[in-house]
Amino acid sequence: MRGKDYLRRSPLLRCLAIYREMPAKFLLTAVLLAVVNIALVGQQVMMGHAVQDAQHGLLVVAKPDGALDYSRVWFWIGLLLSLSLARAMVQYGAGLLSLSIGQRLLTILRGRLFTQIQRLDLAYHWRHGVGEMVTRMTRDADKVRDALINFWRQIFETGLIVVISLGLLALYSPWLAIVPLALLVTGIGLLWREADALVALDRRIGSAYDAVTQDLSEGVNGVRVIKAFSLDGARAARFRHHVDLFRTEARAAIRHAARRVPLPQTIIALSHAWVLGFGAWLVAQGALGLGALVAAMLVVNTLVLRIEGIGRLLQVVTDARASAGRIWEVLDAEPGIRTINAPLPLPPGPLGVRLRGVSASPLGDGATVLRDLTLEVRPGEIVALVGATGSGKSILTALLPRLVDTDEGRIEFGSDEAGWVDIRDANPSELRRRVHVLPQESFLFSDSLAANLKLCAPDANEARLHEALDKAAAGELLARLSDGLETRVGDRGATLSGGQRQRVCLARALLADADILVLDDATSALDAQTERRAIDGIRNLQSGRARPVTMLIVASRLSTALIADRVALLSDGRIAAEGTHDELAQSNPAYRALMGL
Image 1: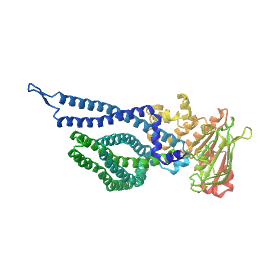
Image 2: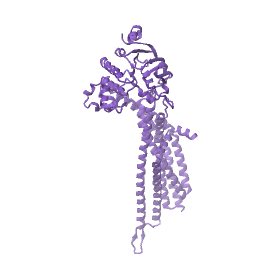
Image 3: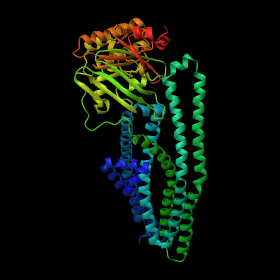
Image 4: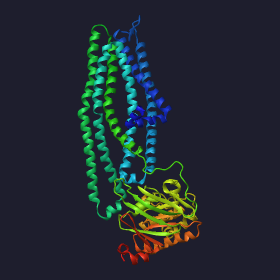
């Protein structure tokens, strides 16, 4: 249990555990890297032996006839070149495998992040911006990938080099190994002390980068508003400010590393001086051969270079610790909406909805938007929901498909004849299939018109798509599009007007064949005549279905309220009045003021 707790507190180790999903590649890469590093040290030892042969005059030997014998020279040259070539080939294979593992790791990490982002409830996305999510999917994931590849490779390879090198130095003389080991431990200890400070600095860099990404996202998505209000200069200045803040934080991290990292690296580099000085003394005493000293210097040089690389690795790893922490903040987040293990199906017949004593504060900041709200919409009824801006109409519509959850009260679906099912007991997939909310923001994917329409009905044929567009008062839209249903609508439907996007989204909602259709001011961009045609199309749809369509329409215009069978006035977080338009217009001053009567 203690190990699991430590793992949970170490986000980078939790990411490292992903390697368990590719054990064969991981093990093969480790074996190849071990072979490469053992061969490297072996090559250096052989170089020492060659020098030793040269010292004793064995490389070039004079034959009895006076000719020179270079066979020993060619032996060492051939052996060293063969070993170098073999090591290069193995290292190339290990490098390819490492890249493959890194890409696989990144794919797994981003896949989990994307799945989790889709899983989290709407309230979580309201609290966190698009820029933050994009940063964690891109910059943070890349940093973790780079750190893990460098981390396990360099730690594994450096560990092998340390063990083999110190073991070889100890064979020549124990003191040749003891002093470098002490210097290594001291230098690495000093480097490790800086880890927490570097993590804190990188978290600040990550937060600054979030703001840059958020500005970039808003600059692209909000380009129409920016141009309409001539905000180009102000938005550019805001973006430059966030970029400058990011650069300032990055420079602070670089300055901190530049001040603190060189000292431990210098301490580690003293191993060179020790091996050279003490080794030369051993040679003078006759306790060590010149070739062995050369081999010891080559080995300690490789050792120091690898350990000095740990300083750079520490910066990469500490950056990645901060990024891994930010990633696991998302992966560990639990949706505020919990489902039961054995959900109940909704009643098979026509669906109505009733809310009883509902209170909701979706942002979790204690600000209650809806208070003790009670409302019932009967099966097949069309109810208009009106209220002042900020009264909670959109929150109420988000409650019905359970995109956010209530704090108190009950929401039930069904009818008096078939019975009622509490929303907390319902299957979320079935609920969202039969209760379709069309938000005010008309979102279309960057794909063809047909692909956008088929999102809710993948098997719909062309005739059915045309029928849905006709009922949504968008039939004439096809005549204006060069490629008809195959016309690409651009990013977020940018090639269509606001009214056209709303009608296409309404047609898509009709294809979903839902039992309850909730329009959250989803016809605000339509003129009164087109809106009437769209609603009449839905009314005609009811006569051709076995089950009537129940509609709740968030209305901000008088023309919308006039279409409804009944109007509900939302005020102060609760339903303040209900009735037909004529009844409310005669008896309720607040309704008359809201509708401009």
